[in-house]
Image 1 (tube, rainbow, N blue to C red):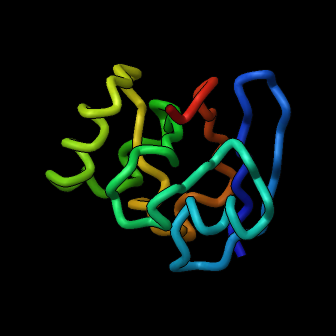
Image 2: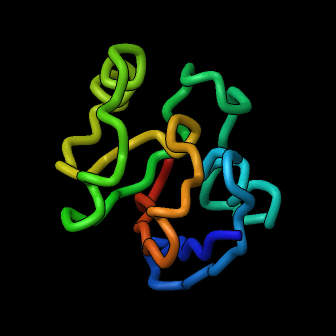
Amino acid sequence: MVKITYIEDNGERHTVDAPLGLSMMKAAVNQGIEAIVAECGGNCACGTCRVYIPEEWRDRLQPPEESESEMIQYSGDEDPGVRLSCQIPVTEELDGIEVRMPKSQY
């Protein structure tokens, strides 16, 4: 299990134990974190599972594929660390990561 902390815009923190291979989105949804809306269920088609990856963790992730980049661009979110949590698999390298969530996923 990998510890991931999701931080809401209001500062509320949710730490979960996520199984390896699950997406960051599924790990949040399975634990009832409502700030991850995930309308499309993880199909990279809605942009409602955005998280902000701290700079020091970004090199531990695979770069976003074109479909993810397009969805982020469509969302209008310009934070340099923005990613879709449905596209980030939980790996051992992410143990201890803390990600912020936007004020709204819409």
